[in-house]
Image 1 (spheres, one colour):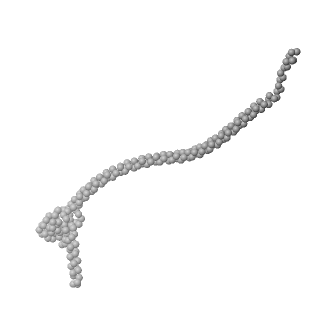
Image 2 (cartoon, helix red, strand yellow):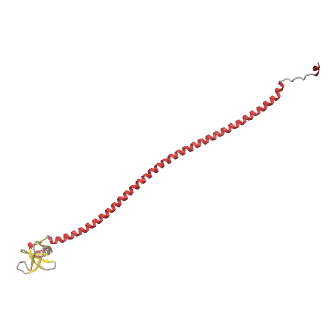
Image 3 (cartoon, helix red, strand yellow):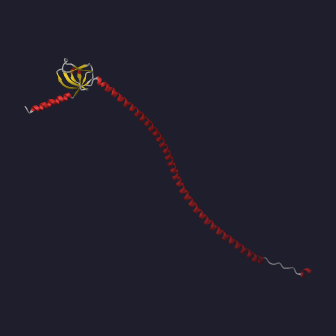
Length: 224
């Protein structure tokens, strides 16, 4: 029993400490009086407005020992205390929160305006990029057409080169044939000329022999 006594005392001390650390608020319904002791017969220590924050300690009957934020101790009726923040406390907090939200809303509005400007800029860039894409596509199509024409031109050029080589070979053949014919004509002309000369010689030598010579008339015969 003696061994458990320190434990009980320690538990009571902890409970008292925890109870003293609890926060309570004056109810937002009425003004209350802080008394010097746990009863209305005790002198007034202070008058507490609704929403006053108090540090609650031990309780005795209908009364609770409290300490104000300024450090003034006293007793108040427990029924006038509440663990929840009353309107008097919540309202400034709500106003402060509203102001904070208003500032955040203004910042968000500015951010929204900035984002909208960036969106417009991005849309303009997208439009410009699409226009560039169309231009590049047209240039690519033109290059493909030119490339196709270049391929066709290369094919035509190769064909014309081949035809030119064939024509050049044909011209060479015709020139050779012309040279041969020219030589042949020259040979034939020479032969014809030679034959004509030979024929003239033959005519000169042979034809006179074919006709008899006429006799000259005698002078004796004419005298008769």
